[in-house]
Image (cartoon, rainbow, N blue to C red; front, side, top):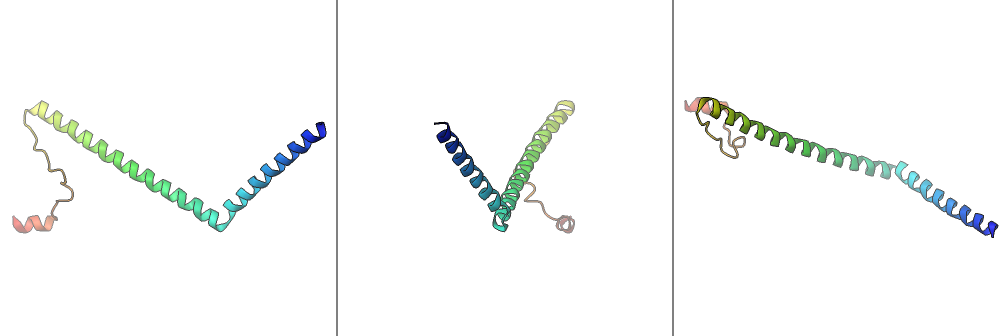
Length: 99
């Protein structure tokens, strides 16, 4: 009975080590490295996009705080910019030509 148990343990260990070695070999191949690199770049792009969204949200929040502070201290209501103000900006040359 002991021999059968140790034979089973040996078989399970051998299968596990063989699978782990195969996995490592696949990751070390050019296709595996390219896949890992692609995943890393994709993850980095997602993190950068998330960071940009957080920065924009923080900027909007801070801008609102500053507007409220100016309104409280001066009593003057600052005009609210249009929603897409950055996209609708005209180049400085066009504004100078009009004025």
